Amino acid sequence: MKSIKYFLVAFFSLLCICSYAQDVPPVTINVATAGTLPSLIASTIKYQITNLTVTGNLNGTDMLYIREMAGRDVNGKATAGKLSALDLSGANLNNIGGSAFSGCTGLTSITIPNSVRFIGDYAFFGCTGLTLITIPNSVTSIEYFAFSGCTGLTSVTIGNSVTFIGYCAFQGCSISLLNFNPTNCTSIETNAFTFQSSLNTLNIGDNVTTLPNSLFSGCTGLTSVTIPNSVTSIEYYAFSDCTGLTSVTISDSVTSIDDFAFSGCTGLTSMTIPNSVTFIGNFAFSGCIGLTSVTIGNSVTSIGDGTFYGCTGLTSITIPDSVIYTGSYTFSGCTGLTSITIPNSVTYIGDGAFQGCTGLTSITIPDSVISIGNYTFFGCNALAEIHCKALIPPNANNSTFDGRYTTCKLYIPKETYADYWSALGWGDFTNIIEEESTAISQIEASNIKVYTDQDAIIVTGANLGDNISVYTESGALLQTTKVTDYTIRITVPVDKIYLIKTTGKTFKVAL
Image 1: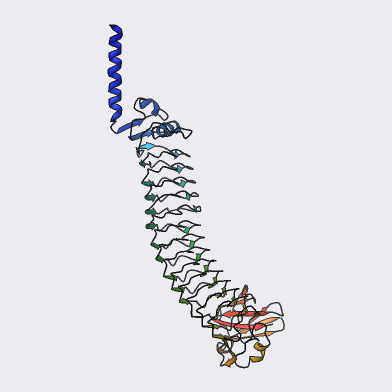
Image 2: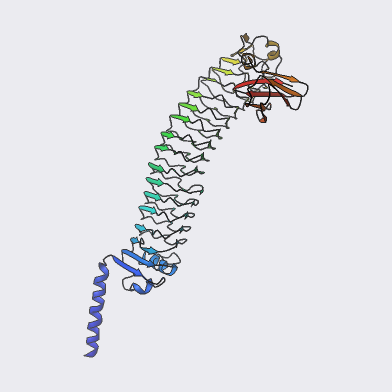
């Protein structure tokens, strides 16, 4: 009889437990002493809780117990845990350690407390059920792959205290809304937000100074970007292959646009580069086939190799007088270009700069140009006129004009025919026409005079306080001298050609 009584008690106890396990209401636990959470949640309901709020003091022991409740043990093996909603907003927790919730696919929401300073490597790796995350202002570091593979993650807000975002931190997510406003973020590693095909809203805060390598590369859903006044540098591949990007506003604070920064952005139709930018990197806009017009600010001194390579839709580009160097293959494959005027500041036109520009019919080469590279006009079959303003024929070779000698007219300054006829790369033109010269060294010498004397370049008449810059034949800056007197003597090596720039005027001299 006694045994039957014990059996009935055990049976009804088990029945109550099973009934309770089927529908466990939200649970709130306060942990007064860190490490005691396992003793506060009965093992009978540990794996049945779906909604958990934890307050008080937590440590690694507590977090491991919560991880098990969320479906994974310390070795990454599946448990019976069903925890999906976790609220730690009232908890005291310094860090969310490496792999803390990695692989917990059933976790759909988590509230990170303001006490957390650090989110470790792989902390939420593969949490495919997460849909949104808010990084509180207390967090300073988001480590490698922290949220990588969270394919359901659509909304991310990053607090203003983050100083570091690690490699691939959000790679493979489905972010559509990103609020990005860290105050002191000094390091964002490559691929942090790459391949976010759903990203269509990007709010970059006013405290971000650098958009680092591959930051938003492959974010094909991104349609417009406004870069705030705090940003000074757009680095390698920052927006490469953002094929949906149609509008970019670059602030006046940006000074450099690095290699491949916007390459493959096929939806871009126009681009204005502000006056603050001094450097445009290699292939920065290559493959932007929808780009039809570009305006380059007047502070740019160098346009890198292949910057506009393959921009087949480009019909108009304004190159400012500040540019002294255009790299190799800069406009190669720009089949839509019909004409272009190179400013009087350019000293060197790189190899293949206009290669394959099949629509180019005329080009003007200023007096400042010292050298033109190999295959510069290779494949420019429509080229009918070249106007070269240089009194001294720029360095060229037999490949520079790719057999345009019989189909293209060459216009040169008066009284320079003999020099061009005898110069390599120029003398093979069959139709050379002298025209009234507008060479810089002839029209800009009203007050300033530049001449040579033994081993020095003499400049007279320049304004006091102005700078005189001396460039080598290859276009590299050799030295800068401040004007302190009416006559300035600059000593340089002999038997060379130099380009002298001062007060907006350019002179070429041979010493």
